[in-house]
Length: 298
Image (tube, rainbow, N blue to C red; front, side, top):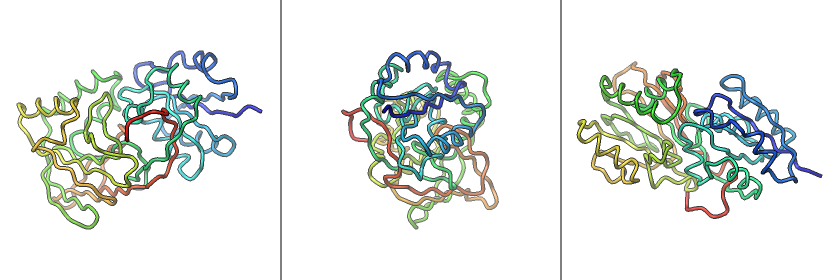
């Protein structure tokens, strides 16, 4: 008897990278599976679809970017179902972190093998995330990118350059496992995974199997230093810069040092709005994800 496998496709992800997926599923998916295909129709829809699918299906595949994988994970956190990824987003941070092939054919062939790893996730203000969450400059760019009609890396880069001109770093109070730090920061990124996507590594040594989160604090910098930091970002050496501090912990709270001042939030590339404070906790070994059989430590 064939095993059902549920595909949830985001038709507005990336730059149309999902196109052709139904034909490739028919061609490359193992005949031992019976595919069920559903397209999302609005933000948050994937969570509802995943909750329903998990009741009768143990394999749920997200076709899209980090946002749809995040939504699917939110709908199946309390289940034993396996989550798989066919990358079709702008950055594909999760797929890249887990070394999942970026091509549709290769990603489907990876799914056929059903090799899985049990990994950590995290909660930010009670919402699950798998790769990154945080505040500061990147949260404002995430909000701009969500409103932009253009997708892809170049669009994100353009919006980042525009925002940099007017952005002002802020003072934050950061509590990590009970220890309080007061820091002025350009970005505060909480890394479960290692990168933003497109091989831009915010915390190259972050692991989804160590039960810890990396609190990455990027200090204010000049334009000249900023160019060097971008180079480090793509060379996986950002953590070695004197402008970057990383503190590891299990429970994190972030608020603005100025009383009653709200701060922006993002998680897995999606904007989370303006909030009074950010509370984050690691959820060790809380989800099973389909990964290649041979992969580096993550």
